[in-house]
Each structure stands twice: as C-alpha cells, then as structure tokens.
Length: 386
Image: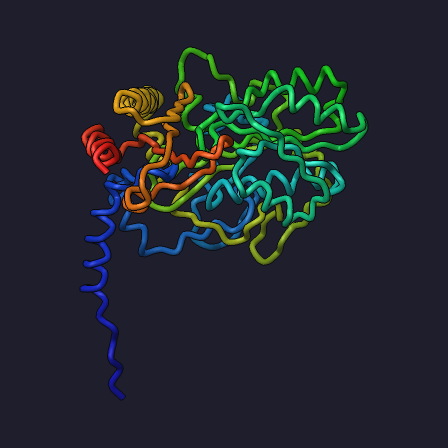
C-alpha cells in the first residue's frame, strides 16, 4: 500500500511570512515578541521534555528539566526578595494557571467559603479561577483613574465584612489595561486599621507584568515583592518582558505557608507530590527562560527595563503633542493608555478596546522590545491622518 504524506512546507513558509510581517504591528498585547535568540534552543525539540509534577520532589524516570526549573525558582526568588530556603514554586504555562494555583492553595488553607477581594482592573483569570475552585463570594473593588485599587473604596468594602471572615486578597503589580501598580502597603495599612488578623487572610500578588519590572527599578520606589511579609505568593510571566517563544509563568509561595497544607497526596505514576495543578508540564520553556535570564544578567535587565519605560514616556508625550486625548502612562510602566483610534487602525495593530468610565472608548500600546520608535511614529501618523 502506498501512503501519501502531506507536504506542508509551502503552507508553513506562507504562515511564517505572515507572522514575520504581523509581529511588527503587535502593539496591544503584554508580550515581548523579540524571541529570535531562542532559536539556539531548537535542537532540544527532538526530545519531549516533560516536567511531571513537583520539580522538587518529582523522581519520574522520564526526560525532564527539573534541575533547571529549580534553578529558575531560586533565581526568581532572589529577584523577588525571598530566601530560597523558604521558597517553593514551579513553572506554569502562563500566569492564568499561576493565579489559579494561588487561589487553589488559598481556598484549601482558608476554605472556599472565603471571600475573594480584588480589583475591577484585575486579570480575568482571577475571576475565572474563583469559579473553578467554587469560591462562593467575590468582590471587585473599583479603581482610580490610574487603574489602582481605590483605597477609600477598599476600606468601605472591608468595613462591610465581619472581622472574623476569611479573606483572599489578589492585588496587582502591572494591570492589563493600564499597567497600574496597586499600592499594596497602603492597602495593608487599611487591612490592619480595620482589624483583620493575618491568620484570617491570604494575600497573592499577580505580578504577571510587574514581576520582571519592579526588581530592576533600582531606586526601591516600588516595593512589590516578598519584602512585604504579608504576601504569601506571587505569579510572574516571562513572555511579557523576557521574550520566550511559548507563554510561561512562575508561581512562588512561601514554603512556610505551603507547609500548612496537610495531606498533599503522593502520585506513584510519576513519583511526585501532587502539589502542582498540571501533571505533565512543559520542560523546554523553563530551560530557555533560565538561560535567557542568566544571559542578560541583572544589569542587562535593568537596561532593558529602563529602555522600555523611557520609550513609553516618550510615546505618551508624542501622543499628547499630536492632540490625542485621554493619554495615561503610569510611572514605571511600558503601557500607554489613550483614546481609541478608528477601527481599521485598532484591527491593524492588534489593539483592544476599553470602555472608559466617562464613556469614551480607549485602547493601549505596550512599548516592548519589538516595537520601535519609528514604528510608533508611523502609528501616530496614521491616527492623525485618518
């Protein structure tokens, strides 16, 4: 019998051409498309690298990268200011899964009768995770113009809740729409002032964007990491700032908090504690991520961070100079928020549309490495001449 094999080379070439062209117009997503240096990891594609279960206890006889995943957890722990001896974590397919992991642990520790309190600007994965773990109560606090949790509104919410209620707080380090940073310390001051004790709440920081920005702002103006002792866990994405070919994130929790969870089962199938939500996990991406972070080093990441933030400040100024309205650029953020242009420009540059609180439709641009200043000037020119 003759078997005809499908020849897909021509179709792949056409699709690659399309991607190469569109990459230069991906302005609206929190993603660094500058991933060309990842091609050197191509030879590892001939192996199925499957990180099954817990990277610290897993002992399956398969091909894995647990060693590099552990190194990545320790490297990110140092950047997020937690002693590696008190840090446990693992690599996920994105901060949506990392946020789900945090909520799963929080509900396990406190009960799913706990109330989740988060921002109306928080990532949709947080509300989705609450539905998945069958959390019964969810409150989304209104934000201010900058996109941060409104402190007064937050206090009003807390005062409406009994002091002995179990609470799960999800705060943001770099929101999706405006790149805003919640003032975690001020919010904690409110929690203390109203009278909630730490044993009655769990605090997770969704630092999908900010987790690879704030460690490299060297003036310590933004402290959004484990130096805040009430923070129990943090999620950070790598595709947003580092530039990797497959979306990825890390979830890190204080080991002292994890150890309060009793009876985590042991899975004989892959010789691991069942502490991770996924069983099979991508083993190639943590390898790539670890080596890219090591290659750039701390000073290299400081330079890259300063560059994209300076570019955002410059772009915001150019928008204002050209008469574009509703321009907002949070300090230390690569996100620039402004009044939305015509639909054809929205579609061409892969931009979202947000309904601003005053009814005006807005959008945003992220000034990541693959977005050049020349491209941004062309973009502004299209808006002003449309």
